[in-house]
Amino acid sequence: MDLLLLGVLAVMILLLVSQNRKRKREAELLVSSLDVGAEVLLHSGIKGKITKLLEESDIEIETTPGVKLKVVRQAVRQIVPAKEN
Image 1 (cartoon, helix red, strand yellow):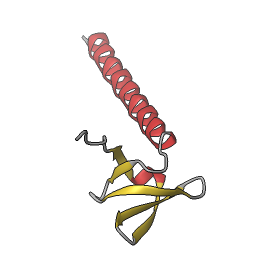
Image 2 (spheres, one colour):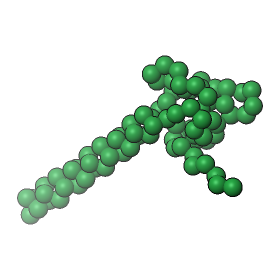
Image 3 (cartoon, one colour):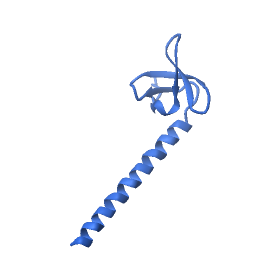
Image 4 (spheres, helix red, strand yellow):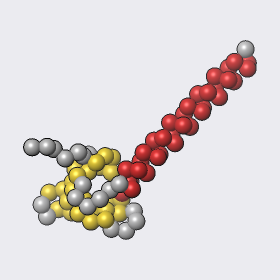
């Protein structure tokens, strides 16, 4: 009985670790794929277009014409797909 419980616990831990690795890998891929002109959504809910890739960890986005924000790359939640007209 104890071995069965330990086995189930070990499987659950392995699943959690693998999901965490996958999530981290996806976040790193997103951050590395950022490019000037991409429309992005930040974790705070702010949308904007990337105008400059600054240092290693910073980008500059333009939220409205003339309003630019300097944010860290990890603040980007997703790249918003371009709308087809």
